[in-house]
Each structure stands twice: as C-alpha cells, then as structure tokens.
Image (cartoon, rainbow, N blue to C red):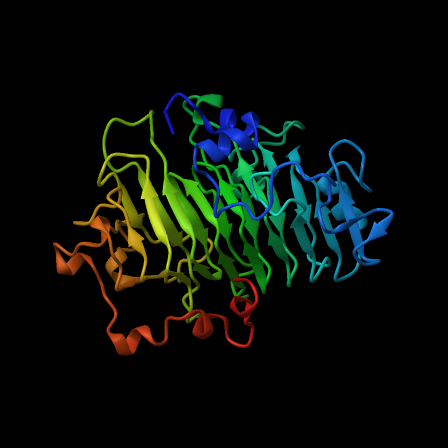
Length: 373
C-alpha cells in the first residue's frame, strides 16, 4: 500500500479498492452486492431461524446498526446476519449473549466492515479522561461460544489524529470469551489491532482464528488468551513516522504463568509493506496487573517474509522480563525471515516437542478446526 493511502482512505473507498490492494483474508466466496441483501440467509420476512436477526444499513433488516441488534439479541444462541455496508460504530457484546453467531451476508469479509476511530489517548466526550487501550476497541466481545464469519473488524485511527500523543493503541477487536471462533475475517488497524484476551487472570479463554487476515505495526496481536491462528495471514505496515528499524512487533502475548498454552500460529504467513528486517516477530508483554505472566508463543510451519528480522526476531518489552525467560518457540518455518543465522536467537522445538503444539493440544475438547476450514 502506498504510504500516502491511509487505512481510513482504504476503508472508505469500499470493497473494490480493498480488493485491488489485496487486503482480503481469502478469495471471495460470493460476488459483491448480492441480489438479495442477506444472500442465502433469509430475510426478516423469511428468517433463517426464529432466533435470527438482520442488520442492514439502509433499513432493509430488523436494525440499521450492529449494536442495536446485539442489544435486542437477548438470551443464548442468537444469530446476526449482517448485510454489506460500512458500520461506523462501536459495538459491545455482554457476557450473557452466549453462543452468538455473526455472519457476513455476502460471504466476503471485504463487504461487511465494522469500524471506528478511538485510540487509547482519545478524550472521552464526557471529559472523564481518555479511553485507554481496552476502551479504544471498535468491537468488544465478552461471551463464551461467539462465532464470526466473513466480517472485517477495523480501527482506522491514525497517529496524525493526535500528534504527539502517547496513547497510540487503537484496538479493532477485543475478544475475551472461551470458545470464540473467527473464520475468514479481517482485522485492520495499526497498534494493538487484535486483542485476544480473557475475562480474568484465571480464565484460560480458548480462541480460534482460521483463514483470517490481520495487519498492523506495534504489538498488533496481543493478550493472554489461549489462541490458535491457523492458515492466517499477518501483514506489517509501513511507518512514515519512523526513520529506522524496528518499526514494530507482530505478537505480544501476555499468557498467565499458570496457563500451559498461549498463542499458536500454524501454517500461516507473515508479509510486510516495510523494508526487509524492519519488524520483530514478537516481544513478551508482562502487564503491571499480572507480574507473574509468562508469555507464550509458538510459530510453526509458517512462512516468514523478509520483513521479519531473521538475526534477532525477538526483543524485550521491559528489561525486567527478557524474552529468553519466556515461552517462545519455532518449528519448521520457512522464508527469509525464518533463516537461522544466530541459533541462540531462534528457540526451536524438537519433533517430539512439536507434537504437543497443535490445535488439538491447545483447544482440548473444543474442536472448531473440524468445522471451520
């Protein structure tokens, strides 16, 4: 993407521009602009199920905003079918909306975009301070059993919106529930794009991302969930505000010390718009709220592009918690960013160790990979 074309420009340009810039997570499964706004998923006059609600930005559904539909979808097992459109709003899903499903009606994630532009340093309208990292999220999902397919979650806040601010975190999606699955979704932002977290320090939330696309620059996949990313594409962005490396970090897990499973990236790829070697693969996040955290990340059988610093792919976030003391490992990765030049900087699993770093081992009796291919 040319530096002059900002994330906001791309989102507002619509699906055609996004496709031209190769931002989709996977090839479209249906054409843009279906003849029926809800595709094969029925309509308010012919509901998919009695517990299905329809969202359409121009009034052809039950609601014109996603948040209004979420508020109305009380109880468990509700489905939202979301028509193509750009939904500029923040969305918050309470923990009691368990087993909720969101479906992008066109089956193309470029068509359904939920976006807003709050950052951690953005002042709240009531004058009570700034939003903070969690409060910046465009979409916050708390319930267990949440599923989303063919949707883009975005935060198009730009550093130029608040020049000089230190609160540059701007979350597209914060997900906290157990058994949360996202398939063929996109997550667009800059710093802290995708917050894969849990509701509390002692809650080991399991999350699964398949055939998804995630982009950003600083710590743009972060949090303490047990999260599996299978067949996902991660893309690092240019940083016009910086003149040298590193531009940022792809992963910043904050896994609880008692949790035996953190982030697993398998059979994916990492590409970059930035110069070669300008990005680190990861750094450990040990938050002040959990000084006993022991971040965990395994990247296996994944193509690491030239944007990743192959000599020193890991870095410290704080001197008190060196990355070497955390749980970082790799296995059979490929690409220029995976070339081992300094073995001490590339912790690698043996074949026997790798057998316990699989989606099945991480997710236990929950098997979303069996149906979300």
